[in-house]
Image (tube, rainbow, N blue to C red; front, side, top):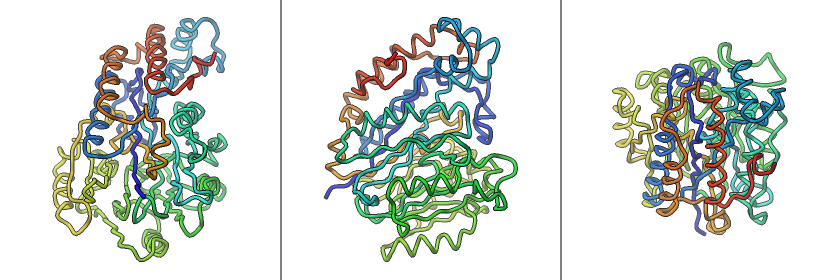
Amino acid sequence: MKQFEVNFDGLVGPTHNYAGLSFGNVASSSNAQNTSNPKEAAKQGLVKMKALADLGMQQGVLAPQERPNVHTLRRLGFVGSDAEVLEKASKQAPDVLQAVCSASSMWTANAATVSPSADTANGKVHFTPANLTNKFHRSLEPVVTGRILKATFANEKYFEHHVHLPDNDHFGDEGAANHTRLCSEYGHAGVELFVYGKYAFDTSKPAPLKYPARQTLEASQAIARLHGLSDENVVYMQQNPHVIDQGVFHNDVISVGNQNVLFYHEEAFFDTDNKLSEIKRKFGDDELHFIKVNNSDVSVNEAVKTYLFNTQILTLPSGEMCIIAPTECEESDSVSTYLSKLTEMDTPIKEVKYFDVKQSMRNGGGPACLRLRVALTGQELDAVNPNTLMNDELFAKLNMWVDKHYRDQISLNDLADPQLLIESRTALDELTQILKLGSVYTFQQA
């Protein structure tokens, strides 16, 4: 049976800006107030998607959210025409306006948690959108994310969709950014690793002190139940509170896995040795590679700065693995030296490819943030909305779409421009026709 890991990358939205909304995300905070280039950002993302498709990978596209989110501003008491609502919000609550204009849905690693059919009790692929309750601007996403996922994975014979978890910090869920799956083959049963930052109900347990822990153990356990996962195929691992306080806001900033490889920093986890032993026991007799990066080779600070672990590890058609890294890794002496050595080690990783995703990196997300991994059998892949899968034709269409609708520059002062709302809605309405998603946006349903 054919089996694939399909990467669904988020299209960068037309309001891509640097508002520095994500406390705990060092890159986001350090670039706050800078002028962004939405057109360049969207095209950088498309180049990466097309390059992976050209490598023989299955590559998909997920649509962005509707922004500015005028509907939320109305819920918060702003009245009048759309233009009046934006003007009032810009004067009375500029921080709120910035939040409802965020293009953060581009980081689809936070869109949902996905369990493939080989792991689930009913043999379907399960999707649970992340509630992202820790950040207001991201908590606005899960309803529309759910609609987009249902339009992309619409066949009920193969796909099961769940409502996001309750909107409360006790069940704070950040999606696949804190979830990794290890397996011998994508279509075989694997071990799903849920990495959490804190216990919600037992505050005596270790937790970070400076920055928030965005994922709770209780949320991870709830998703495992929803997806029908066996206890013997799940490992719950706590993220090291100390690294969260160094700016490691998601697990995918400090570790990444693919098939039989777990690539991680020595400070990534709490109680590391016991948890690695549990993974080995549950993984079985197949070969498993734990690749630990020591502080002496790459510091946590440098790993966060370059997003060494927010890289993608791909299994190429040849069977060898390749790391997709941002150019920031290449520009760092310690990281580039380590990656050169890594390809010579006795592991499946034999190649590193560097991509320029600076517009995303400056806002706090690297290559792995931009993609949601979905392991599919051949039949399941055939059941995916074919208009969302990357090929030469879609690449050309989306580049023309970006050229037609996106601005070259956006400053925070531009967010109140009513014309930006019109441009964004016009672009998204056309996009739903290109991808054949139906009416997934609230403005289309009004």
